[in-house]
Image 1 (tube, protein in one colour):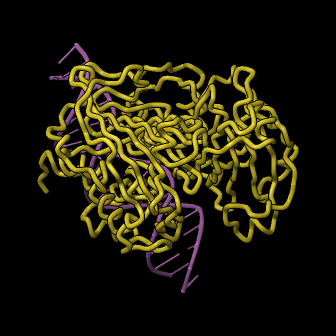
Image 2 (spheres, rainbow over the protein chains, first blue to last red):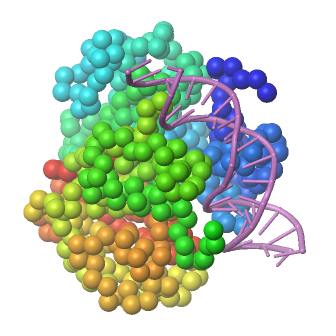
Image 3 (cartoon, each protein chain N blue to C red):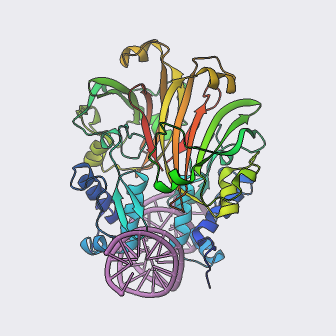
Length: 239
Length: 239
DNA sequence: TAGTGGTCTAGACCACCCC
DNA sequence: GGGTGGTCTAGACCACTAT
């Protein structure tokens, strides 16, 4: 029953395991997850801890819970799911979703007029920038520019993010877990650049988000600009 | 220590009280809320229950929590806040936000091609429809059409919603509390109708949301279409 | 070091759903 | 009636922040 610094909390382990089981199809939409009591026994823990995990999976849109019945796996939706905590790969089957790195991670200065206040640490260490295009069924749907402080993520520029989840990478390599975040959301006209990237006519309406993600390490905050063509897909958010 | 059917759970009471204190300005942005131990004592409950309330206030964007320090009240933002659980009035100071009822609540059939599956109960009882326009600083920013099953909400059509929160009305009159929900989000061109309502040029980009809100009564689900002009304002979401 | 939030235990009673 | 999730108790130990 010992615990060392890098051990994940039990509830996080439960989240990861159940999420994997759902995404992999072991539990299909409509299926019931094991009950709280079963999970408590299986993981040698108590209902409080199990409930913490199930609550978060509910927030993330993987399950919904029904009093007297159980935890039910949600329908997979034709959405992108990036508005839930764990990133785009969770929302659509990964067969149909490809990620193309348009700018490889590189060190640079923080952009001027950056819309978020930066800490002294963030200013001091500068930022790492990269951009990705998400392609669903051959269609470029989402363009995403990401900024992270160049601190506590050694050799990040060497990592190949192609078709990998940024969040999984951060978790696997640096024990960084996304804990919470905030979005600002706008509807804008496609600029020349965005229309080229998303292969959409100029001035078409584009969904634009500015995103700030907080992690378990208070110095590490992930900032993104997102541009989404919602002609054929849409964003979905659970809360 | 008795409990009757209409008693709110303690954690809900805590949420309501703390939210009121924050919105009213008793706690200002940056202030610390009382500690979990203080609140446990004050409400004669345990930390688990207090934490349940504080977790939800965090999700709703009223506070953020800092290990070793406390629960800190968030900055008020120039957002609309409808993407958090409790509706638009919580996001902007109510001085600047007016609600105009463009269609008073009336009974009608569910629209054809309604994008969500309806239960037998919902189909049987038909729906109540109304629409509202949210005006911030004299500017029409948001148009909202709402559909609720005409079930368990007697005399709803008699209630005056002008400048009142729908959620507060449902809570006060019918003990209905919003528990969770989901959004689909699109960026669209303003139709002729929407452009008139929001006083914006036709074809301007408009943020469009289809919203489904689940309540503590499983038969009562609130459906909304939202249209938001994000030229001068934007939507903000915490998670 | 004192106080805070983060995680967790080992129970309890209740309301709700299904059989 | 038996199992489920919803709420709650009364503790515990740990990690983090501030001083």
